[in-house]
Length: 195
Length: 125
Image (cartoon, rainbow over all chains, first blue to last red; front, top):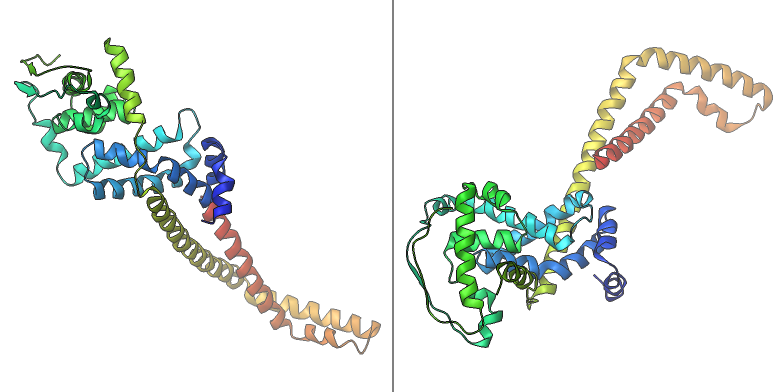
């Protein structure tokens, strides 16, 4: 896209860009990709995707979003809408690769020792903190707090019981809280029920 | 920190994704794929429109082709006679003598028109 076109769209709001994209103005959609591409790719990486895998899924998600742009009513933000599309696309990919089933068999209970850094940087190191979580916890927390899915929607997308998702989220949050809190130390997580 | 407050903070942290170094290159890749997809789609729609137009127009023509040819030939003869009386030397009127040509020109136009109409319909879908 030329510089003048980029400048023309740079001043427009996302909703206006969506309207233009809906009538087939690809350059307007390109501006949306420029604005939100990193956020979508970042979410997929936080869900556990490798960088190249995240890029592939994000590209497909944006193409899907372009195809379905007329369905976007502007009720939420465009970024949130694309993130949901991308998150679901990533889950479908995991399902195709038979990796999603492994989550169902991942144990919820058990003892885990979470090392907490305790320095100031830890407070903003979400990516580092997410690495402390199990794959299922990371996926559930990212779906609910990154992609904005409800517990029920996440359960449906993951093909897991609602209670299991809630447990993964709860445990994930506990670990993140310990990791991201100012100060901190080593937290030993005990056995918990499935509620 | 209260649970709700931490959850809000977590949502903010998720929303504040850092800009990746290759953000522009990524956007360009998506735009290229969009352009490629639309070119392929346009060709596909065009081909479908032309095929549909040919089929539709041929059905239309074949349904009563001979009768139409006869009617047009008769009309052309009548017109020619009329025009000959009005302007005996008008060269363009001689074209009407070829009633069959008119039919085939009309058929070609019908094919184009139906192809165009079908293309529009498919695009709208």
